[in-house]
Image 1 (cartoon, rainbow, N blue to C red):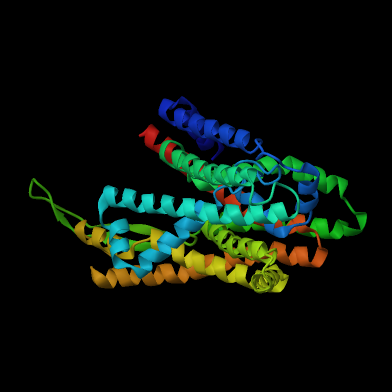
Image 2: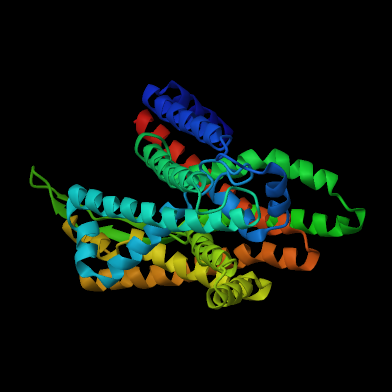
Length: 425
């Protein structure tokens, strides 16, 4: 196994095209980290540090901005608006058949048009989120308040920064390796690790040593569980019928299998759920600071509901579980797989070709996705439970970040291995 690993590693670094892709990703990540260090004009650093302390909402938002919120950088919204826009567009395909046809059946041109709609929606959501977030920050005296020229400039900068982050993610997906949005989030989490370790070291409380040990054990189990669930597959047997050869000989039937992944959605349900939870909470927080009594009351009620640990944990669990099914349904087409099997002269034993095969494969996928989604949902809320018990906010954020990091690393390793195998053959 180790020799095989070294062989693939050698292939990766000797394949010029693959090396170019890796270097392209690294170059984009360097640009991304430089952008997170450029603050918006007029920031009150002391007020910002005080406001960010033990703020769960902004802590999760900081994950999507790759640490850009800590310094209130020009990319402080990160890829959050783009992820939310992607979710809305995917949901709309279930409601409008024409939009679904555009995405699935209109070829490359239709897919480009669909993605263009997603970009337009990203700008709109970035504007709404940017105004809401800057309104909250200006209310705390961190940045200039509306209506002022500097405040409008900051809104334009923040919206432009979010659109730039979306573009960088698309460049990674097209010219690099892996899923661009996930890699950007991954890079931001990894960049925060030294600072998080430093804070944990100086805030160390000997009385909480058993809690830290327990969290470390759970973290190791989470890593092992994510790897196991990600690699788990259900093998569906497939038989290719006898075929007539050119010379008149009849070839014997061959048997193989179709691997169906238990966690087809990967890390995307976690990212989707966090994005959906943050958007209304951010808007509600901004509404709570309104001068209008009715608006402030509604905003306070919604923010209080979403700020409750119990309600937040229940919603987080449900969203992760639901989005696992949703993303699997979007990315996995049982009907297309059944048609391809029929065209290739293959069939599943004891299952008729065509619609019955599609139904059979879909039923299996639904059942194994249940366990994959349940695992992701349970693991997602476990850090929140630790945070509620200990009162240590870093445990909740760190657990979610751990899920994302492990899943992205697994995905990158598999794609690099696939590229190395293609280069070898």
